[in-house]
Image (tube, rainbow, N blue to C red; front, side):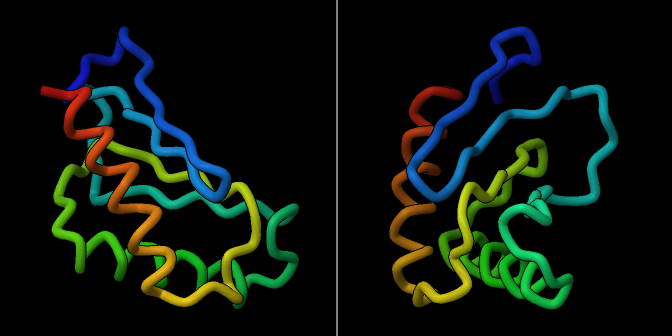
Length: 97
């Protein structure tokens, strides 16, 4: 895992994956969906659930990352989201080793 000083982040047109500080206690990956992206809480929660399921299915277990959603992906298929996240995660894993 990259140290907090490196400020590591990886971005695509849909997401940004950012390494969080090690000294913060974490209960899991953080998925950030702002009201600017989806106005209704139900839409934001659905996006969070889709992303968390995609992370689980890809096998990503690092708890010290924040995933920031840049645009509304609620209309995308789960397989499309998995593909984008898999590419970002591979890039993240290469950099963190």
